[in-house]
Structure formats: C-alpha cells, structure tokens
Image (cartoon, rainbow, N blue to C red; front, side, top):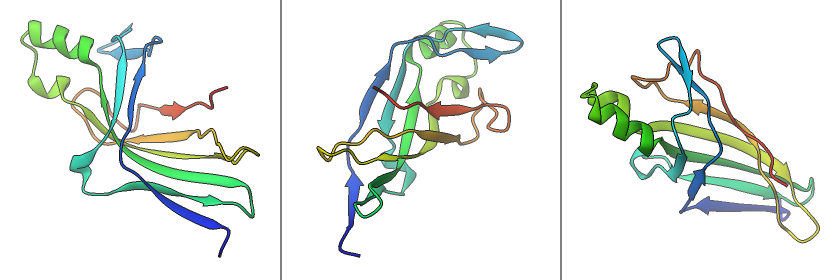
Amino acid sequence: MDNLVKFSITSLRARVAEAVSIEWQGTRFNPGPLNILIDDIAGTSSGGVLDYSARRAQAEFHVLLTFPKFAEILEQMDANTELAEPVHAVIHSEGDICDDHSFVLSGPCDLNRHALLNPEETKAFVLPGT
C-alpha cells in the first residue's frame, strides 16, 4: 500500500487545435478548436492513483468540452441554444510511470447526453502523446 499515491486534479485547461471531425444531420465538418476544462459543476472530483509497484498511473477527469467557434456559428443561425452548450464528459485514462516520474495518460471518454451529440453514436478517445 505504501507504493500507491492518490492525487486530485484541480485544474485543466487544454485546447485541441487539430481538426476534430463531427457529423451532424448527415454532414461531416470541422467545428473548430476543442477546449477541455475541469467540470467543477459535476459534483464529482477528478483524481487518480499512481501505483509505483506496477509503474502505472490512472486518472479520471470530469471535464467540459466546448467548441467556441461552432457555438458562435450556431448562435448566429439562431439555432437552439442547447446545441451550443458544453458537453459534460468523463475521461478514463491510464499510462506507464516513467523513470523521471512523469506519465502520459490515454483512454476513452464517456460523453453525457447532449442535444448535439448522442453518446451511443459518438466516440471520443484521448490518444497518448509523445
């Protein structure tokens, strides 16, 4: 048990500038940059465990996914405001702990129900970085 270190994730601000493809009403398009922030509203804290005996890290991030450019376009079109709201999601990630104690996490992302994205038809995954 001494080899386990629990931690809390209190802040996260990430921006994915690469194209994230979305299909909506039969049309595939690039909605612009994706912002990822810790979801303080979720009521559940984000955190994880470092298991030094297995040299593995695991974390669960409760996040908000926003597409500001796409939201702006929807607002200009007077579309339903629910379509432009952030997507609540949970990223389940894990990865190896490196010799320098750093780690690169990756894993699936579970999306909550949203007016724009059907979670049964939408897949999201955080790929390992380099």
